[in-house]
Image (cartoon, rainbow, N blue to C red; front, side, top):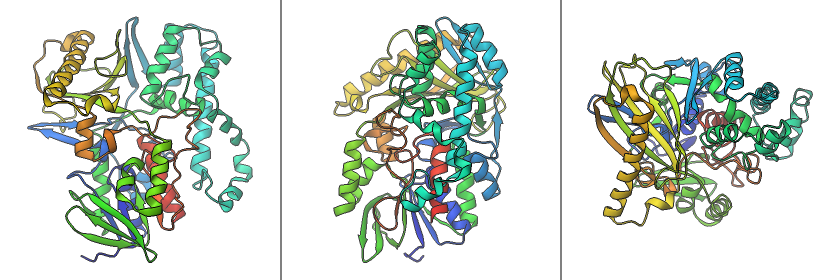
Length: 486
């Protein structure tokens, strides 16, 4: 195998896979480097006997023909095995269940029933309007946000005029929008909104920009369940990459990225060396600091200091014996108190569909549960302290799960395990086990995120720590835009 490639892509999560596959389709010699044995990054999987578990993220959205994952499937001529869920999510609260219907009319009827207020219809209409305009801006302008004068000039086009005014929503919080519609005093509704935002924008209404909040609050309208798990579509992209003569090297981490004589030099943990004039990195900015050198290292160090915070995840996994037909695969459970050793009063639950016999044999389901935690909670502990905290958090979450799912309470549960930021740090090599990207806020909004174009010739940044941020549609969009720019 030659060590020289037209392009080298770092990290085989959704961002890296997308960039690599699109470049290979354009007949460019492309190397994709991945530190893990499986593709998918934080959206990967692990296996326990007959059961497949999503290691992290579990949902897909952005699948419509004009949205990132829809466009990607068309360009690569692949079709993901997914189901669009009529009920995108059920939120279990102390006041009862809230069905987050995909259909807008049904959702508004549910919303008015649970949160009766004359302005609810106007509020949600505004959110859907904003979501549509955001996709038009970022979808019709691959060089957005602008990196140079030519990019700025491309934005001055008549097609952008009707939508460009929405940018002010980047600098105003969702809480301000709630005030505008007189919805801010309803504590029950505000908590519902906040708990939805923390799983989509990684922030709460006081800090989250109302533009990105609109994207987060409307995404259950287009929630898709991937059969076999979130890693299955990623594996399909990897297979397509291989068919187009792309080179995927797994289980070999990058240890050095150096620029010399107009060429990027990559060295791996196993001592392999590769060179290319162009590098596309989906390795998060915090991890790039220790891999790069001199001016490039200083650039990433400043970015890491500027965006120094990201969430960690606490995960619980188990298989459960049940043939119960559930109304959806996705749930958010509100808790009355903060989850032990975590930073949230809710957790997100994925229960595999009964007809998904890839994830679990007939008569069984797999369950993946996630919640937010501070990464520093899980490092610098003795093994005894670490295991004790893990067990306390796991026991709490399972006890709440049993309470909220009485039909499953006494079902046989097997392969119960949990994961912390320490686990993610070990398996994904992500700094401090950070997952979910940089939280959106009015001060650090998606326009101020690290740009996909760096100051260094031939070095591009994608993934959840760069524009436009976290979420599968976002990282796929960034990868597509970088390839189009190239």
